[in-house]
Image (cartoon, rainbow, N blue to C red; front, top):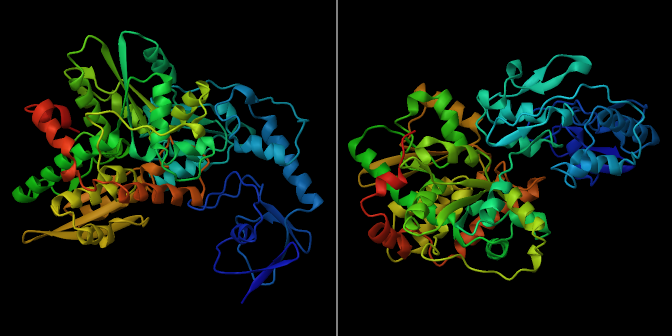
Length: 559
């Protein structure tokens, strides 16, 4: 077996594409700003530099490993080199660390401490730039950008949007939208994936916490929360709870202590979505029109389709997202009460903030979701309230919407919407586990960029595609338009792996965290007493007693 020598230790080569991967496999976590395994190699930050036996210094992320290489990763020369780079980065960086959104979780701050940078010898001569608050989803602060390019490559390579790029050269270089437009005036879909990869606070979540605190302190307002499926397996990251562990019960308890009057599970809204979307699919198949049917749960995808594929307008499901459906039902349920109802949705997704503002998510001209806060914002509110989250006893959500299926829960992972819809279409009233397993192993699960499966519906084979990441979705649609593929149902999620890695989730989240979140949602599903939306007894009650005659008005929209 071929090997290289790293710090006097032999390390085998096993097909790694770059030297950095081999070094990390050896247990040495070299610092990086611009390297992400799912993005192209940029090699700009130079933090991962190493030294060979001839004294040559080079970036390990862009170096191909070769048998017989002798590498050193921590010589005095390298220590001084990295420390100098860090000083130069800090010299042109805004240093309001104590009041920064990322204080305590900032990669720049963390590495400065690790490298022993306790003073900066250089003066910051950069002109201060205005912040961009135009987007309902994210905030851009150019003064904190270190030009690592992570946001640029993520937006272009993963999402296929390209809302950000480099402008100017040399010391004047900046990351910005074309012509320095406001980000909301670009094709940005609000997915927040740029925020996920940003190592500083140059891109952060647009905060809505203050509006929620105001509502909580208004005695004439009933504040109602709905919690999205993917939140429960990520919120614990902020409080030292094991990765992927279900913290739903603790989160419900914390929200009640903060002052929320009612707390519900958005998975119930997902059960409603399954009912409506599966019926819509069957109807379209019967009429053989407006196929394929594209899912409409992901607001990033819906906005992306609006500007890039307007010709697909009639192909996108008319169903509101689970957030949209549930908020409309909640507002309708409490409408006759003397108190004003303020609906707060706690989401893993920054794009949900924009979705709540869209006119098609208003009922009778009234906004159904009053405020959207992300998982990260919810954690911040809990800390602000001085609640010891990890010590809380678990509590259940409120009735009459207190029962949700496991199928609703797995909406938070790529393929989950499809699996839940298939469970309903192929419903077995005896809850035959072999039938559920057949669907599980039909190809709907896994993290391949594009997954394909099919089912027989009567005499017709229904062909299905599942895609996550807007760049891949765009490529698939172009191939479909060219006649290379034919599908009847297509699930699209903007974020890779689905909502578990949404733009509003706690960061950083490495490979182990990503896997743990996916596994955590499936674990919640298998532990649920109700696995399919058909078995949820409260859904029938809602249709019969609460929204009868108003189903389309409350649960559907036009995109």
